[in-house]
Image (cartoon, rainbow, N blue to C red; front, side, top):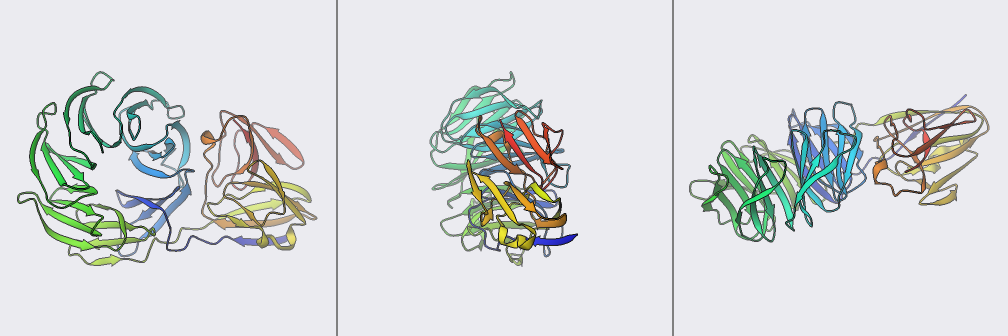
Length: 422
């Protein structure tokens, strides 16, 4: 029996379209285009990769609550099981231009840039459905606090909503343009403004927010820790520390091409336009600046039998078929609705047929990726593969093993090819 090891190239250190960095417990959740990475920073000087997988669309926000991971993309909300080694998709809610999500009990509150506030019932994680909404265009952020919700928009400012009756009722508006992010700490809201600094509002009486002060520095994002306010000033490429009493900048750190940041009070975590991670301690010293740690490789064993085999690319990277060598006498794939004979590359999560003259063992190494079946258009057939065990629903599935077809199997195994139609 022949053996073949195929190793796929990792992303380089410089990754384009970086868009998100959030601290959760001992890990950073980093969004780079449609790839979500989890980086362990328990030892900030030596971060390591937890997992990396593609969610299929551009990542805008993430939220972790218990054993569930909620990912907002430009196409909607996806809910994952966060207790597995690599998160597995449970269900999704389609809505374009979603920006932010907050989870409370069995509701997901989504800030949608064109539709305003969307309240989604997530009691059934496999089938999230719209509950109610509040129209307010250019929504970019929100905070939920008990029976009240603070909705932030770029054009219309801040809206205070009563959500106690499972609907959103407008109580008050604070109209200022160019707001970009907000956080709540105690009885105060901290709101970043791209041109006018950070607004601090007293919300001890939520229906009647009161202006307290405003900093003079421009701010694209604000993070409030117990003893500090930090803002991102994209124009200057700095993370600035603000004294709340004097509303002035008391310290800053330059980070070339910075796009986003987060802070836990002890460390600052920054992400630049190339997807490079830097970690800065409280003294302003950079303790890590070597890009993003390489993803841990997963090995996917594949057993070929003599004849045709339906397998696939289970990773988040394109697969170069030149690495198949002499094992493959012939191979063909179905990509974007077209049959392609001996393609030079197999895209992520795409299946392919491979013909072998003899039984053989091979394995593919790379970063696991799971296709989001709920985003596929209905009515068309797709030849796919998965990097995690998958239980396809809401469609028709075929797998091919040992010369036999199986319709709607209970599960599809990693690196197995399968046909799917919604």
